Image (cartoon, rainbow over all chains, first blue to last red; front, side):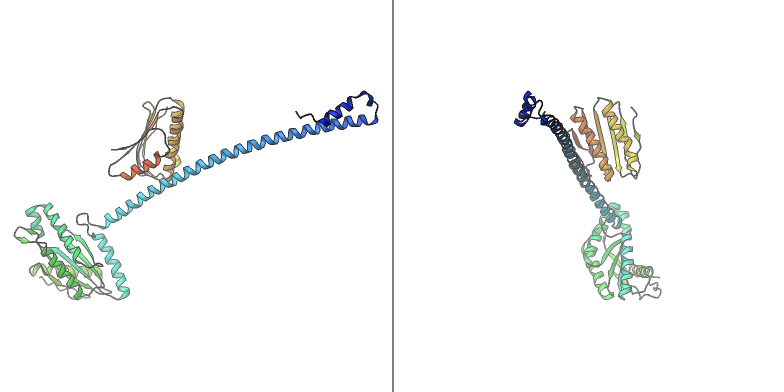
Length: 270
Length: 124
């Protein structure tokens, strides 16, 4: 296995030489040489085995590294796809939330969103000791429009009027569909004089639409109630409703203001 | 070979296999509480079918929402298909989506990325 060196040849020649057969050092040299050869052989064996191990370890390491890279790539892909699914869900959630808070026909806030806004605003304004004003609006003679021209025409009128009202209120007012042909406008931090200006703007905007149904130019009536800190929401809504009823009784296409709260509203239209 | 007929639930897709026809159908949303319980029979079926038969395999997928563990399982199934495809087997995926759900198609594209077998993203 190992190469034969000049020293090996020299030693072997000396040991083979008959003239040294009886030399006292020959026996010792022979033994020493034998020992040297076997040690050399051992070192070569150990080196060989060690090389094999190193080779194996290196190969194993490379395949682990390869597997690690593959797994990492896979994991990144799973995370990427999963993130996108979550983004889809989040958007869907937003859309559902939006749908649950808005009226499908007019796109205005629906009754649920109005109720949430009323609760939030009345609590906030109670802490600040400030008023707000609620306006209930109702399209005049709406039933006749539906009866005479069908629900499709009625729906179109609702959409037009909703748009006119929403564009007449101020940025921080909330105009929503309270139900049927009835709308509620929440005006935070707003007293009666300002509220009445906004209502007049809305009334005129609706009249200016010139939506004609039969012999009627479509109009709306309004009931306004100021909500003072500490008033009950349901009482304020009911006062606005009574004022609206009064506006209807007094000829429609007009606005009536409810008497101050903390006392039952007088049934003006009896 | 035993086929799978797992009906859909609110959080798991319908899973149907047909060994005779060589088809696997998955339909619906997939966000199982216990993904191992649901998916190990599925993975088992795919691996057995690929190992024990020589017929083609077609996956018909009508999947909508997938949670992370479902994404992982789908990738494992596609890895199995990829391996079979490399061995000369005829395998394919048809991923169906509704027109109003374009984002499902985008997600199917992501899955398709590393697959060299036929992977069709089909509008219904």
